[in-house]
Amino acid sequence: MGAFLEKPNTEKYNEHGSGNGLRYGLASMQGWRVEMEDAHCAVTGLPGQFKDWSFFAVFDGHAGARVSDHCAAHLLECIMETDEFRKSFNNDEEQLDENSVKKGIHSGFLFLDHKMREIPEMASGEDKSGSTAVCALISPKYIYIANCGDSRAVLCRGSHPTFSTLDHKPMIPSEKDRIQKAGGSVMIQRVNGALAVSRALGDYEYKNVEGKGPCEQLVSPEPEIFVEKRDLEKDEFLILACDGVWDVMSNTDLCDFIRSRLLLTDDLESITNQVIDTCLYKGSQDNMSIVLVTFPGAPQPSAEAISLEKQLDDTLEMKVKGKLVGSNPRMKPSSIFEALSDEDIPGLPPGGGLPAKRNFIVSVYEKLCPELDKESENLQESENLQESETS
Image (tube, rainbow, N blue to C red; front, side, top):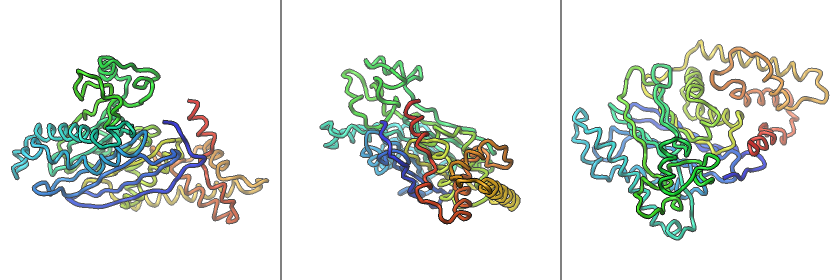
């Protein structure tokens, strides 16, 4: 729950794809954590009669990656195999039973959690891992979103975040009440002073209270499920991300930042990479994963926006040159960034600010100082890590 590397692992995993009128890109990064425990799933075109549906999910593991990996591989099939889900559809979505879809998602989560308990390492208690889960099933007319834990989904519609899932934290009154009724306590905002989320898949050491059902345990596998009717003109994009992203960016900040990047490029992998880089430079200490799904109404690259970004880059390059002139000894990139942070620089990416341009600032520095000592490339100063450990 707290082990960190001496410097962050910034290698990224990416995917992208398209189908059913949707485009998606995803990125994940281990960051400061000693292990990568996040997992994800992205499928456009589900099997059988659900070929017009798509599925996206992010899983944020803790105490190991076994549960998050297993969920990424099996949650969708567990949902689709439920009687409720299969019976909800009769080839005419106008007649689709929304409640049956929701019941199928609910049953799929609980069935997956029940079956995972039988995995030998789980049954013996050798593996104590768990995972949050946030997922979206997108049909031609609806978006079904399910959340269990503190990963989050946000829908941007008409230029603004219009929907967000609710993070399941132990201090929420209804969650705290369930925990206490199961004989547990909430200390330092954690279940029994240890676990920071109140709902998760796995975590079976918190699910052994006799006489209580699966959704009444200290930690519940029950998803909260929402249905949004699609607006084909106003829907822009859907974000699924773990708390390593949301810890440092608000819903509005992230939607504003992604909108500004969509005006510059249609490369969704590049945009998701920029998101997790920006979160790292804003101080996130966690694994980071994000899935970005764009709808037909998403912003498109604009010549005006590209021109304004070029002006910003020219301004930043001039400022970096100015900091280097006469500096003795030569300023390091981190010192230049700190100095620029105190300046009022117009045109910075909304929601991202100067951290969103940190990689560009480094590239300018390296161009001007090709003899740059590679050890100085780690721009996330160790002081940030020390501050987070004491906060």
